[in-house]
Image (tube, rainbow, N blue to C red; front, top):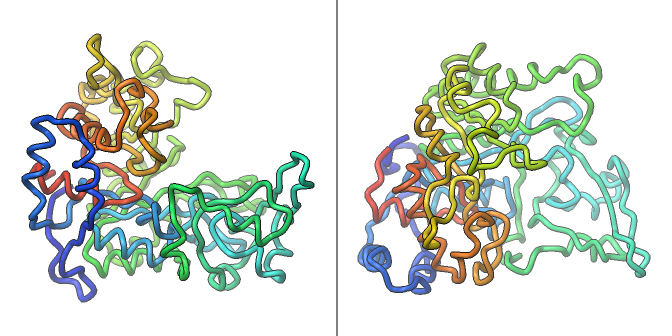
Length: 399
């Protein structure tokens, strides 16, 4: 991955615009050499960086996986933008974080003719503790039907007694300020848009929420193959694409069967689920980092907390997981910055391994610095890429 400015494509962003948030975070930092260094960069200039990855676009304030969210991420200097790819009833790939999140991320429940197609219709709370529920999947709709939906901020009010109350569930630390329009994207449309901006791609093959093979003849390998086929059809150079999956078998399929694209395939490590791995104990790593490397894997992407721990003085340092990955020659990407509420009380799930060292918003920059300098990550997913873009430009990162 390289730090480059956008220049030639017809829709390329003329200038990166970062806004006030990076300096808000820097102002809140405790006095340090890092703070002084970051303050010296405030005049810019700023350019696009591959270190800065738009997680679902710019999902902190824009409806995720929409044209508006992708454009916002590009304008914030994200050099790589993510489309999570799932499939519709007619097996067309579309950008959604989950196959069955339409009730959370679109206006489907306010559209009676489409809401009637949902796997689980809306059921209100009874006002005495029961939760309002619904389940609407991309695979409930054809592509044509999907394209008529409007994206909204991810969230739901589970205490709702009406659909209107249910869809008004944006978390307080996000905003609906930019949610008046949310243009949904097919995977192919995301490729066209991101390509026109001169940026790179990090598509994720989502786990299917329907039994596979779908309808008896659409296998997981068909699904994995279809993702790559869209880039081939668009004439995208393989080195611009970082296909990713939590399913290691998907990644190994690409390595074996699509080697040009598989060379940059990313294993999203979810072994934290069920406490399947202890990042501070290499004996719990199965497969080991060396075994993953021997399978042809080049990139691994755990959540932020798995890469960090505290030393005896309470300083944030790389975890054993991070050190073992580097020893095995694996390149590391991590997720997700700007996906928590306030850091004043430990920062939540993404900072769980270092929560005792987190007590203000500016600590996000300290974490980012350790990830970049000590862990050596090659990229960081962020819901608000200005933060990662600012840091990358200030530190002169060039991968």
